[in-house]
Length: 141
Image (cartoon, rainbow, N blue to C red; front, side, top):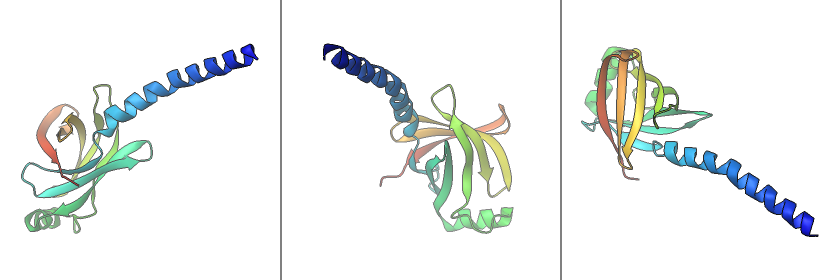
């Protein structure tokens, strides 16, 4: 009986050690999930899991942002996927592609939480070249 209990204890200890890194990663990277607004509060994007990756869809946009997107070739800004194929990077953030609707272009991009209510969003014409960064703010639920 002692041997069976010892084995059970070892199995539980091993399972705990295997699950702990997964939980730490989910907590670290999960901070990006939610609705975020750009600095001018003209667009709100919901960032959520998309399979093993992360994506972001426009859930609200003011009239000017919608008009700018239409002029750029995106007829319906609300519902458009702006963040595509984002995956965790080694720096505690996310890396993927960003669609810019008013320019009808897709750029390389990153998103990294600063704290619970802010993240730095960055898009580059080429990886690391001709980049623009913005601080986005979480929209209260």
